[in-house]
Length: 348
Image 1 (cartoon, rainbow, N blue to C red):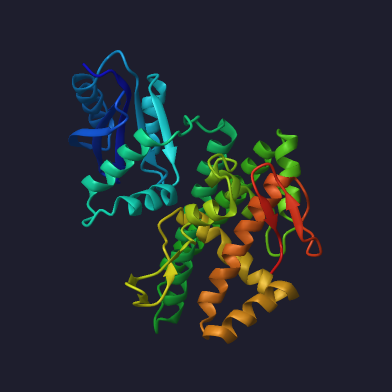
Image 2: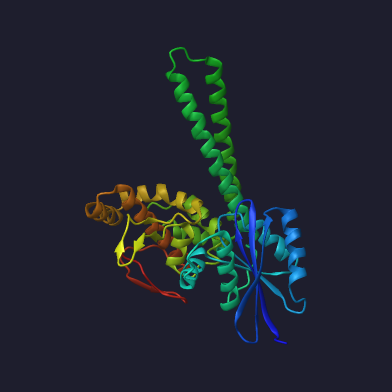
């Protein structure tokens, strides 16, 4: 009887469900994906998944749970499994996507996606996931809360504008809207104070934030959001990966040797990161000659201002990653810096 060497549960995570494929590899070194089931993405579903895994696997060999880093929907399951002592690996979506393309799967479904993740886990050597440090977890919670408050304040301001534009505005409605906006302002101040209190306890983090803030258009809050959303760039090994993680990677529709349709960013990534780059990119374009030149060059090439602005956003995110990894301040004059993992070119 063949000896099982490796067991993997590949999980395609969605907001409400977990699509799971179970696979194994024996001493013939051939992947065998032999079971499939869907579970609810909630505690009861986690428990059902654990029961199913125990029923269909060899208890003498550890099971590795592999999933993509997609938004926040995978986090509760990852913490749950890790807390129970299971081996968990979280892989960036671009790695899974590139691997899935090599399988030449004709039809892409949740089931085939989970099978690709399972086979990736069986064939590749991947690192174990380590839960993020508490400081990054706290920063993420606070920055996302602030983001929600700002969105609600914008709605209130729009309502106030509409009410004031009425022929006969309701004074009490206007007073309540002003009160609501003041509350949002106070809560945003509280969150900023909480963020500052957390940051100042970590001198290394303070230094990194100060370095990142030397990039044109990038302030301390943007630096904090970027660190929080990437857990200190925990899974990131290159500029290309951080661009893909944020959904800034370019997607093209192709048929044979011709391209069908316009290229566009995939948006399959962390929307909080993409949103955090929007205002810094506009500021960099307005106030920094180097980024302004990049923007003008791209607009003159294809005539689409938004597309050029997105390119600047992507460039800024890559620079943030580089400054984080190299622990150096931004300098538009230097050309090359070498990190442990790659040669980084910082120029237009």
